[in-house]
Length: 165
Image 1 (cartoon, helix red, strand yellow):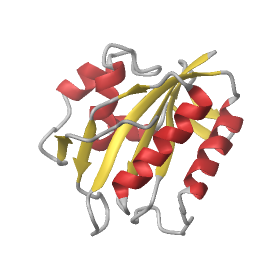
Image 2 (cartoon, rainbow, N blue to C red):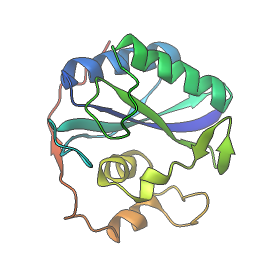
Image 3 (spheres, one colour):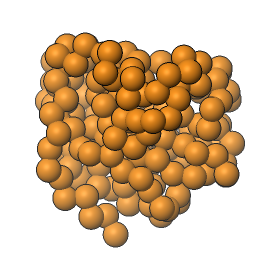
Image 4 (cartoon, rainbow, N blue to C red):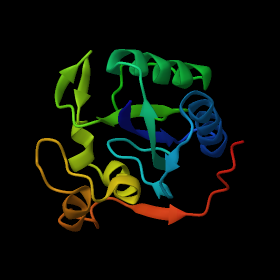
């Protein structure tokens, strides 16, 4: 079993889509470790704020198969794949970490580069894996967060009813 962390984000009917994604993840990969929920301003475009979090779980699927499962959860939420990299979306689920694997595996970049670039990924990852070491930098995610420009991107923790049973 691999230890997996995925980022989850939505800015279209965000509470609904996040709850539905958590139900789908629980049905497939329970038990889940769930970070705090964060209200985050969009990066790279104008739009409604995102609800972002990170979810951890154990998984026996290969990386490519896991990516397909996550894409299906996105499609089930009404996710449209547009040519725009930065746009509003019903649901975005990305594999951040898969054990300590590094490189391009089954077309998936591991660890995901966004971990060290964006507060909306790093801050919730610290909640659930702060003491784990980045596979290529060999420093903890907490250390990366402590040295991150935390004022550059708004990530406000919010109360969110996360019952999804």
